[in-house]
Image (cartoon, rainbow, N blue to C red):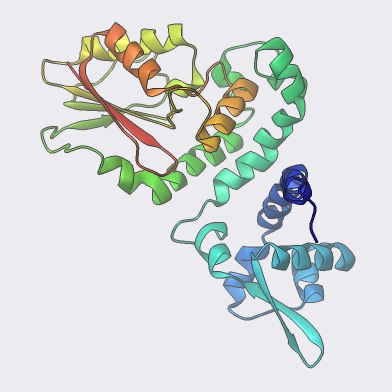
Length: 298
């Protein structure tokens, strides 16, 4: 007979081991296990995988079997020998060639985000990002602090592009965008560069990087570039009004604390920022996926 505390204990264990699960998946991607198995097109034994990827036999066997437990790999036995191949999940999301690959974002999480989260306690105490502690960077422009190298920048940008494969369709279907024939997805150094002419501007996963003052500065600049009838589409993970969910938005908000100057916001907070910049007829649509959509017009 189970005790009343048993479900709590299972949940506690799941939460405690969560970072271990993440790092196993990250490591398998970094080592190239899923790409190797996809490329060979046939199951391989652990020693063969280890030799091809230049790892220890013991460590690789442990990693492969853990990936089986996580349903990232299948394991079959042929004449007493264990052979491994990708599951559909791994083929779809974890190989570089997968149609909905998240490979580069997982690398960024492993090499950058994971390191910063070691200092979450300090981030909460101080209320600021932890790049100095994590990577020994001096306090400079946020852009310079985030991207320690061109390779890291390219990995992050590739990861952002990959995310569109799993949530972009819902975002772009949130509103009828046919009245906007010329669309500009804003990126780069938008605080300094001139805003090009367009009918609709898109700010995707940008505002959550910044505090309210910087957000208002950017939104006001876009508003000034807008002609009457132009629109602004903001793509972000929107918190519930009481900020108690959804969980993914809360976790992303903690990540903004650790890595940036910003936070995730509620629909009311985004409406407030857009209104203060001059935008009107503001609509918020929840997609049910990672990112939601906010549309404002001039």
